[in-house]
Structures are given as structure tokens and as C-alpha cells.
Length: 412
Image 1 (cartoon, rainbow, N blue to C red):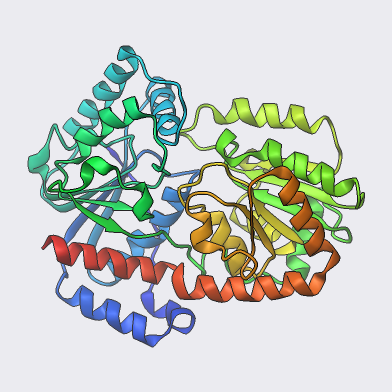
Image 2: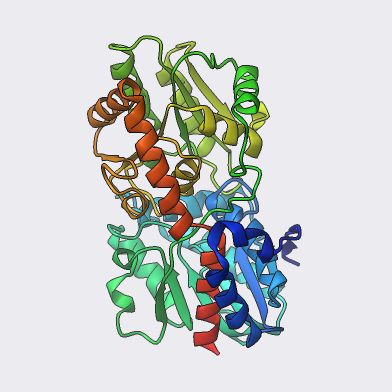
């Protein structure tokens, strides 16, 4: 069988003081007509990425309002994840196309997982390209199928896109972060398109309020001097996240402010076999600089540690060159930290340039904006306050729950 993922209990009522009674009341009303709906989330991994972080909150909140929600992950080996990582890269714009053997591996594992899928679902939500081909083998196992795309499809590799789109057109619905990500081939197709950005859980260990003393204590355990300025990026070790560019920006900053430190923090996901290679190349590029801390989950970096690094940082960066959404952006803004992000993908949806943070397109611009923030503490505080309120209004999980209930109602 596919591997079920255990999730804890969460109560929508606990979020009322953060998102307001009107939203909670709307969710309750929508859910009343959907009680008992059997929903399955199918994804590639339960660890190490934004999809899993979303589902660990979304699934229990769906259950709390009466949806019979489950979450299962695919069965796969390294050969499959090597292929799906190449698909992911191609869909985000890589020029490297997949050969016939790679597509055979992709099809083989999707067929195998389709055979293991149980039936009787009202809705199966298939997350990202890895399991996108499951539906074509067993469409009868669910009354409705929805493909949820979490990646940036604005400039895809055309050949790879031509292989993925036919798998999706027969779905009953598809969900994208932004309208710009919707493939032209889906216009006019029977697959109804929904636009729905993701969201963060403000009550999770990664995002809950952490005292300055506790944050400083955690940072100190990893060799970060809490009395000196800190730049920080939290992301997978992936070329699209551009940690090399962040190091370049940091070096430009330290040429004028030598006391600044940099923390590059990420988790190694099970469906990202390239991660270790790029992690090692990032360490090599840092060239032994003792003020560059490169950390991952194998250094005992978990949710609380990430919270501490973001909370303690004087500048939080997400200098992506491609980004489906970037949950780490909303995480930093929620902590009222001054933020600088790449002007790509879903980041501008979260960052209003000059109001809730800064958008940049190069290491040089990133360094310039970092120096402005470090030299003007009041500027950082103003950006941080505005960013937190922007996230409160638009990017907390109850809003995401409401959007999914609307999609279920449309399917019904």
C-alpha cells in the first residue's frame, strides 16, 4: 500500500484571534455542506519541502471541520526521484530534456503507485508532477481528481511541458499559485483551473512566537554571535534558490560591514537527490569562511531552530531565480523581519517592494538593500511591521482551508 502519513490534531478555533471571526464563520458555513467528504492528498514525500509543511496543518484542519481527509505518499526509489527532479527542473525552465528511458521510469512508478491506491474517494488531490500520471491508470478510484501544482511554470521547457499537460487535462480541476503559471493548453480544457496561493501555519513550531532570549540561545548553540548582525536564507539547497548568489551578496556587504554573519539553512528532502551535491558545492563556494554557517536537518536543525534563525536575523533573504511561491518568505514576514527576495514567481505576491520588503534581481542589488536595512534599523522595523500584517490578511492557513472548501463545493 501507499504510505499513510500521520498528522496531529488541530482546531480551527485556535486561529480565530489571528484571522478574525468572519473568516472562521465563513469556513464553518462552507464546511457544513461538505461533511463526510472523503479526500485524499497524494504527494511524493512527507518531509523536507513546502508541500509537506502545508499538509501537516491543512489535513488536520480539514478533519476538524468535518472532511474525512487522509494523506499518503508515493512508493519510489532513487531512480524515480532522479527523474522527477529533472522533470521539476525542466518545468521551471531548465534546457535539459528527458530521454525515453527517463519517461519509462516515470511511467513505471506512476503505474505501480496507481495499483496500490485504494478506491472510494470523493476527491484525490495529486500534488506536483511526481504522481501526475497516477490518474490515467485508475480514474475510477475517485469521483473527482485535482492536480495541485506548487512550482513555477511561467517559462517551462516546452518538450517536458508537452508530456505533462496531457496527463492533467483529464483531471476535474487544477490548482496553481498564480494565473501566470497556468499552461496555455489548459485554457478551454475540461479541467477547471483554480488560483490559490499557499499559506503558513502561524501556530506551528516554525512560526509560533519565540522570545528574543530563546532565539538568541538557539543561535548561540550553532556558533552564531548574537551580538553581531546576521543575514539568513532558509531554503532547500537547490540552484533555483541561488545560495551562491546569497554568498556573493554577503561578501559585498562584509566589504563595508565586516561584522556581518550569514546563515544558509535548509533541509534535505527525500525527493531531491541533487540536494547533497549542491549542498557540498555551496560549502566549497563558502571557502571556509567561519562567519558563513551552512546548516541542514542533519545538524539537528529543525522547526524551532529555523524559527530562531529567522527571528534573530537582521535581514532575511530568499534570492531565488525561480520560485513557485516560497513559504519561507511569509515565514520571515510573519516574524516581522526585514525581508529581501528575488523578483520572481510567487515572491512578489508576498512582498510589495519598498512596503513589506524589497525585491531584487542580482547579488549586487541584494547587497545594496541589505546595507540599507543594516544601517537604518527603523527602516527594517517599518518593513517588518507591514510585512507581518500583509501575511496576516492573505497567507495564513485558515484562508487556504477556505479556498479548498470552495473548490470542493465547485466540484460537487
